[in-house]
Length: 517
Ligand code: ADP
Image 1 (cartoon, protein in one colour):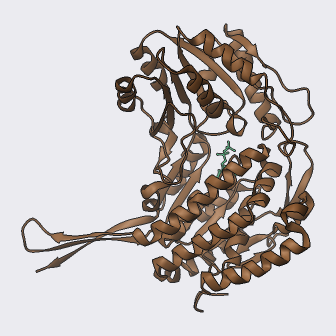
Image 2 (tube, protein in one colour; image 1 turned 60 degrees about the horizontal axis):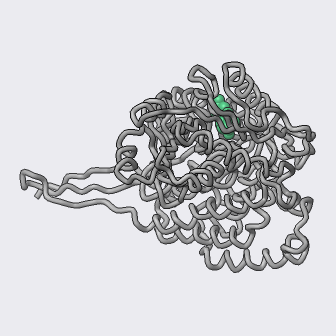
């Protein structure tokens, strides 16, 4: 399929997809009969290139397994570098036509995809729980958050504007307009399989850019399921392409080196981000980088401790601690540190570890055994350097990649856990005595993604907005992500912003035209 044909309207294709939906629910996917195997069968296990579902030219496959059980979920196509370039061919071939598609129309495709995703929210939640491990209730939360990017950017597509005004000399008119930056390559991580995909796809499509998406090898199924949504709402062929691969570097490097690519957006580790920035330099690509974090969570002596405990549980244990926004260092005033630690420990002792599909489970597995080893190494290092263990502190006895939710206090300054992203259910507390000390500790990191501050003193809260070197801050709250807000960091946490009015600008370039009088 090419883009020369008039694209089917989202409305007409939505009614087609509604019929499909009815057929699907009759056969296997109605809520009542939602089974894991039927769901997995309904996820395409192929590459989505130029509007077609295709095997890898090499015929290679990769295996997706469930972290809670180690069992195989599905074998899917494993893209080669040639497949990657074919996906870029498709994105490049459809770029002009998509850029010329009316903004309202682009928005309607996104809105239709949002509506269809709502109809499939249970399927998306279960799929994420299976491939990533988070408890079902949290997966449902990610569905709500992740789908919101489709709705938000469906609305932003029609608000791309410029300006027009006289030049200071009075000799002409300055016209400023916005153009889509061009074919974009989107690389996403495994920890939020839906939200990380929609947070990039939606603004790119809204801006008029065609895309190639490469999800993480560990959790590629959700992105394939998203591609299916877009196919069903009639998105023109080639606008969205998805390649799944076990060879991230081999497949990505030729795409990034290709002069047809104009934009690279990446979410993942700072170390890989630095490699990609270097690769992007050769063609002076626009880049957006959402990288690592080392979030401070400051509890002042005047904090409402009930709020601080609730905020801490959310900021630390959501996603089993596997979020770049996860609170990494709890910096707590010495007057409340003991009580804060004990209250948290009581709550943490009530957590239920298990497979995310099981009722009542609050802590799922880590993504793999390597993650368990890393969390344990950090805990043992902190204890060896003098920290006190309040609860946890070891692997779970369950089979699978589980780590006991852990609280350690009195963590000493030289401990590795204060410098590295934990990415696990480990809460580590250090104490401070005055505000300047807390700020210095919080800023003592090369990262600058998010900070959390708990204080009932408004003036102090406002001072913290100025003094903490992070791109985002939660004031008396432990979860801040919102599709309507600009997400992103400073320092080595990244470049650019996703979401909010800012998010679409990552995919637009500014054009200035002078029209003399
Ligand atoms: P994490 O530590 O969270 O797995 P990574 O930065 O390793 O984060 O991975 C994030 C994403 O980047 C994944 O999709 C992964 O496949 C991809 N990736 C990793 N290394 C490279 C690379 N050298 N080039 C392109 N993509 C990469």
